[in-house]
Amino acid sequence: MLPNGIRAQWSAGKPVINGWLSIACPFTAEIMAAQGYDSITIDLQHGLIGYEVATTMLQAMRASAVTPLVRVPWLDPAAIMKSLDAGAYGVICPMINTREEAERLVSYVRYPPDGMRSFGPTRANFSAGADYGQHADAEVLCFAMIEAADAVANLDAIVSTPGLDGVYIGPADLTLGLSGRRYPTGFDREEPEIVEVIQTILHKAHKAGIRACLHNGTPTYGAKAIGWGFDLVTISNDVRLLAGAAQASVATARKLIADQEPSPAATATGGY
Image 1 (cartoon, rainbow, N blue to C red):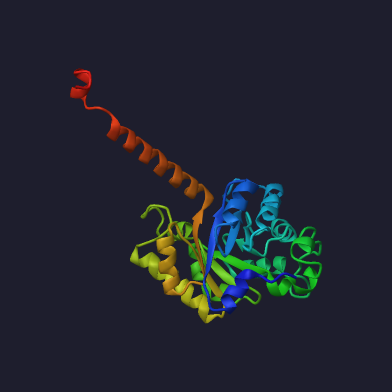
Image 2 (tube, helix red, strand yellow):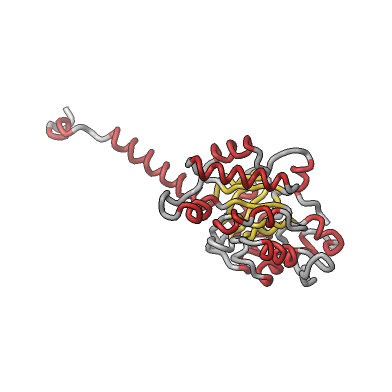
């Protein structure tokens, strides 16, 4: 089986830079995969992507060295197992709030006797290697999202779940869960009490011997999170990159055009 590039990065003591895909398009996936990310996640929860297109996106990314992950819609064995069978090298599962949910997540990712994953790696047998069944449990990554007040309350029990490789913090939902509507939604939190919780999750994960990952809105905040000790940071997604680049392009064009327009006085005198 081809080795998991994320695990290789971590073994070398290096952090992982992750990209994010929300647009259902193999070409977008192919472009993003060629830009130097260590890993890229296909978002089946909030992204506009279904299973069949996600599979073609995984195929498009295979030409690059990037490690593919999938965020599944929910704690659902069918979605998790099919994502892995399609060739994902790891699963990020939202709204894991208890030890029991974390144990169920692990069981859906691992083959017996460590779990209950059904064997049928339809595409993974080709994309990862014919010996996939012998090595998948050691290579595939299992991440539980921590993004609710209940998850924070049960954090010690969650991070000590056998077979869980790491936790992935969703700061937008985490802030909503801890503060309600007191703060605006979004990533890159600066509120001291929210930052404290984020760092507490990081330290408890590391104390339990697992990895800590954080979703970010900007590369600047992602770099800061690496400085705190995070093992994986998501720094950009296709939707925001497209919107930001398009907005900047239009704004630049409008400014340059406005700078070239003749003044009202010049127009009134025919330009003389």
